[in-house]
Image 1 (cartoon, rainbow, N blue to C red):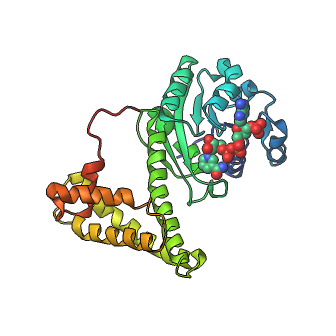
Image 2: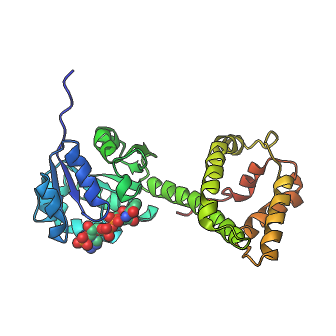
Image 3: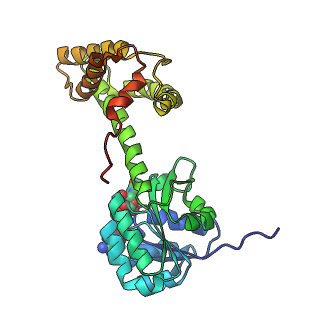
Length: 296
Ligand SMILES: NC(=O)c1ccc[n+]([C@@H]2O[C@H](COP(=O)([O-])OP(=O)(O)OC[C@H]3O[C@@H](n4cnc5c(N)ncnc54)[C@H](OP(=O)(O)O)[C@@H]3O)[C@@H](O)[C@H]2O)c1
């Protein structure tokens, strides 16, 4: 079987993320056209073999697949508004951070100009682009995701979340939310331990080890919450309520802010007061899940 021919690729936006993305395509042997509002940022890529486009329209015309690691929604519209005629028949992959609503607006705008649209969220840093440590989320055109999966995988492992263009951005925020809770928990613990003479740098490796173990626990929490069955958990609401009470009490005694864990304490207290103290910890899900129609 002959190897699939590599399509040409265009990258518009050569900021911190755009440069490693364009570099990854060049390294993978793709004919790559680049454009950036500040033209000099293309110089190093052109020296590595990229074709320089002098306008966004020229860049879009150069390839069937246009990747846009621009700053935000407004930047995408401002950069590509002068290129709308060239967009017809192209696939636009917008990997800028936008809201779910903005992603849907961009999809409609692209469709209005005859382009297929895939929205992306980059769970990566500049240095983890094109490494196993980064991954990108996508939603929008299934045709585009399927047709260009190989190209998307050049940038990072690719995950698809369906045809709603806003879905990738919602999953992005869900992952950020998971991380924020863990990292704020770490900062609280570091403050607590700092008050007894253990420096944050000493604590960090222990916390990392603990978090890896916590990550292994996620499938069980997910199974319980997914089935909404809370009788087989490894620890109960009441057991964890006692633990969080102790943590809040200790924090207070050491003059440490209790803002991080008070909301969790309130949830556990409520669950227990509702008569679910013997249910699994995962049953907190019942207090958090949507009860009405989502407004996104
Ligand atoms: N950096 C990270 O660690 C990281 C990680 C994950 C996701 N992200 C997301 O990735 C996207 C890009 O981030 P970045 O760090 O690469 O940003 P950046 O370094 O600030 O680059 C922004 C890019 O957008 C262009 N741009 C901004 N406004 C524009 C406009 N009105 N018209 C045309 N071009 C415009 C800039 O052009 P000029 O060079 O001319 O200014 C530049 O190419 C953002 O949505 C960010 O949230 C970033």
